[in-house]
Length: 387
Ligand SMILES: [Zn+2]
Image 1 (cartoon, rainbow, N blue to C red):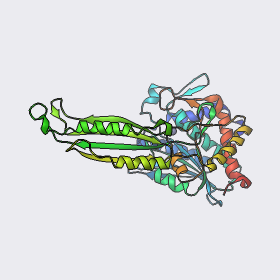
Image 2 (image 1 turned 90 degrees about the vertical axis):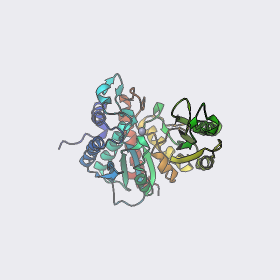
Image 3 (image 1 turned 180 degrees about the vertical axis):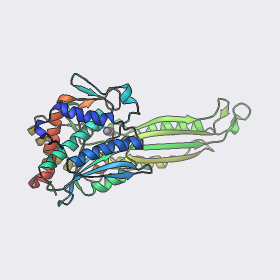
Image 4 (image 1 turned 30 degrees about the horizontal axis):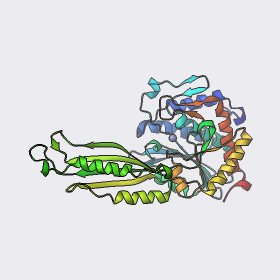
């Protein structure tokens, strides 16, 4: 085996080659065989670095969640690192939209969100572990279904978070390399209305229109939007009816909502669950829930940010936090359990979820040193380790 290159000598070219290999492995949502190929590649690289690694099957399709551990027997709570290796892009995107370099930008599906971030975290962990074992356990979870809400991985993520002192999330960095310290919670509402069909000409008065009902419900939901409080409701899909001349028997809607705090989540959920039909004779079926609880910025998050800022300054850049974002991540799960969480620590770039997705090559060595410094501070230097 060739001797691994010391971290300080790693060149952008070498990091780009490693990231390209990950990006070439397409990982669309719920494509079990392709996800497995990527999981095995990451697991192989982790084992080469000497890290304890296992593939944990989640969901009916046994999607592999990669769990990588350094210092399994070490005392104290762990440093939990979260990344995901699925992307939003369908198979064939790499073929149509080649992984390519233009100037300082490496383009490719999943470069920015978030294979580069996951790759950097693994490289930093491997480099530290090769020097010596950590003073407390470090766990890196590579999640296979984040882009579809982590429904299958959530239980496992939360179980590992319960043993964690802090959580670091390698989701894409924001403009300027900045990080995320709060995220809204995300929820869903599905409403189905069942009315009574009738001939729209001959027997109009007999009918009970499900569409009329669902339009009332759509307006009621949208009225819950309150920008000053950061609450949004979006009715994103409406279906219903059968024909222009039939009073519609069935209609439905799907809505997405975002909230800033757990208290808000509780309040809007109670309103949604109390929705009642407006049109006489129409029945409603309401399903609603929270996919991801709000990630609220606690004083412990501020303390962790202060520590990360010091590491960033020593690495040569100024780390700041961005304002509350509406997008969720697996950091929502850890933060909601009270684990101080820092998110958006991955690669710099732009264009997440689009064909314009790319990372900035020149920033990669610095981001890697940042990860190395942050993990070292949190897990390799016991004096600084939090209990
Ligand atoms: Zn992501």
